[in-house]
Image (cartoon, rainbow, N blue to C red; front, side, top):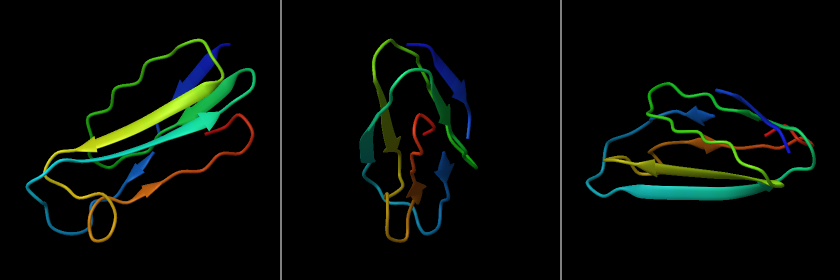
Length: 82
């Protein structure tokens, strides 16, 4: 399977930093050629491609809480577009 990657996932910091790291993860099943789009305002992003029918997304924060008043993660999938 060939994976096309475009940078575009949304991290929108809203709130105050916290002292402990936080983590979020999700798997997306895809079939055939997939497109990943990630959008961010301020982040250090690492993306690697692989063979298979799954896109694994993982977000780890440093000094920010995920959810609530912290980092907002918006994910969606339409067919092979994540």
